Image (cartoon, one colour):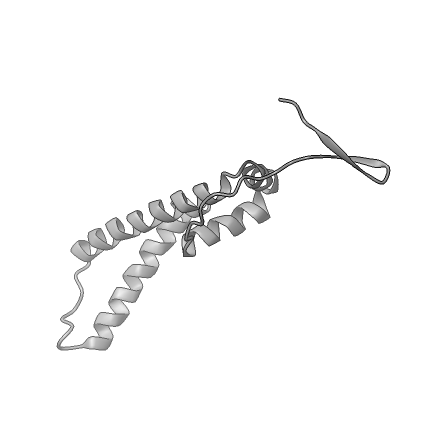
Length: 114
């Protein structure tokens, strides 16, 4: 691999260019992963940014997290059935929010913050 340089004052800077990938929509879990990498693994974050692999990694993280959330929600709804929505809507909403929080806690620990 050969690098070319350009002079700026007394310094030589490498001519680096990051190839642009097509824009990827990154959701909640992808953004959380990005923040985690930037704050806790700065060298890995910088390397992935410079090689153009960061957006692909974040999109994969988002997809994996969403799929895991769907699976966990289905499993938890079977294990902990919700009250009848027609009789008590607030209890149903609270139960579903609780299940979602439990599933999200698991996804964050397994996928986003690992």
